[in-house]
Image (cartoon, rainbow, N blue to C red; front, side, top):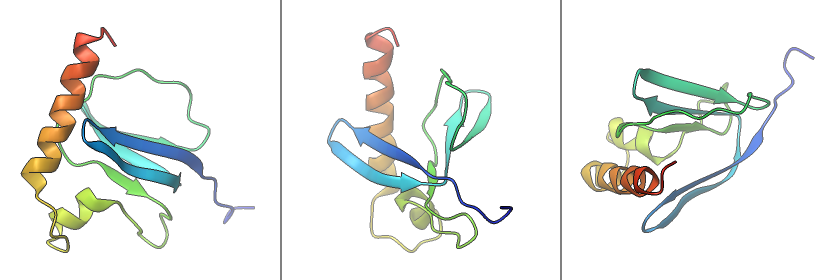
Amino acid sequence: MANERHTFSLSLTTPDGAVFDDEAEMVIVPGAAGEIGVLARHAPLIALLKAGSTRVYRNRQAQEVEEFERVDRGESEADRWQLEQRIKAAENQLAAAGR
């Protein structure tokens, strides 16, 4: 029971489209007051986010993470600035919509 993994469906979308749509064990997002980690069965949460590194763990023990973490480690060809700008644009849209 201790090694049982719990996952949840996670979709991350930017104004340019989906960047992740799969099962995840944990996601860590940059909150206004610090990083916020979310696991399966997390209570509903509304939080102010800021631009920064978003990490999606498909399997925490195997250290399988999403593209932002790979950029930080220099293992991805993706443009980090462009990814951050997409996140900022999405945050602005949410703020304009009053969410």
